[in-house]
Image 1 (cartoon, rainbow, N blue to C red):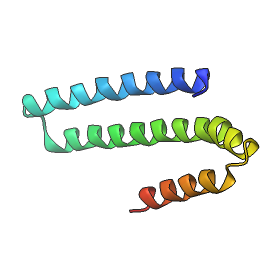
Image 2 (tube, rainbow, N blue to C red):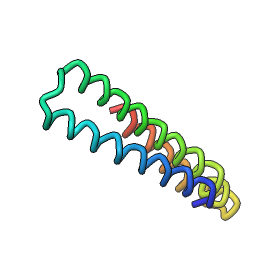
Image 3 (cartoon, one colour):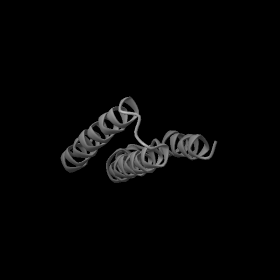
Image 4 (cartoon, helix red, strand yellow):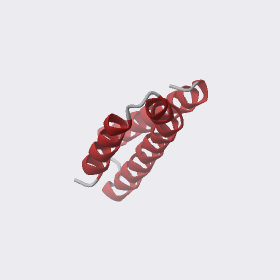
Amino acid sequence: MLTDTKAEALKRLNYITGHLEGVRKMVDAEAYCVDVLKQTHAVRRAIEKFEAILLDGHLRSCVVEGVREGREDQVLGELLELYDVANR
């Protein structure tokens, strides 16, 4: 994993963790459901951003390296698997 990707991913995970803890506190405090749902939407968006960061890093490092090493079929298979998982 690229150093910049790792740093950005860890930063995003810290944000997600904090946000989830906030949602937990809202539920525990019996906050208004709509307010909680708005926060869960923000968590989902943060997870999507985290996934985009990881995918970008993967494409720029692991995929390039795999193609250079002649593992095009393996790399392509993994990308197709990710696409399939994302569209379930």
